[in-house]
Length: 186
Image (cartoon, rainbow, N blue to C red):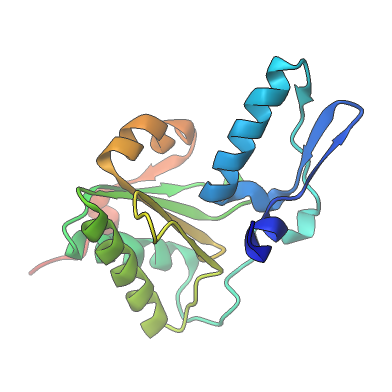
């Protein structure tokens, strides 16, 4: 396991309770956690989420930027659309989680398209002086996660998007109308 993955996965079994740090929001870490939890539940262990430090939650981008989180989410959605992304959705999650202010979900039909969408978003953010805190999944490009602190972007191939149904998981968040974030072509 690489040093980065080791640092991202912090957990302990204490009194048969599974304690998980807030760093486990990364997709690769979640897959490992899912497999481990599945085994532990079969053995009768109670799984209890644990937040290591509230001060780490909602941490903003490490680089200064002129974009607020709403504008950044809209910029990410439009960058995805420029690369012909499928079914782009922007969710305002400020009222339901401290992880971020906005989530952007979008999809591609192939590994190449998913990578192109991720690169377009990263490039458009870099022009504004924003650097991702984390970028996961680029090598396989089935599910790419771009974490900018206040905006988290998920780019999934159709199969993964249909399987995980992340938008449904966050269905209590506010869906931002495409009319509000879409760039005007005229």
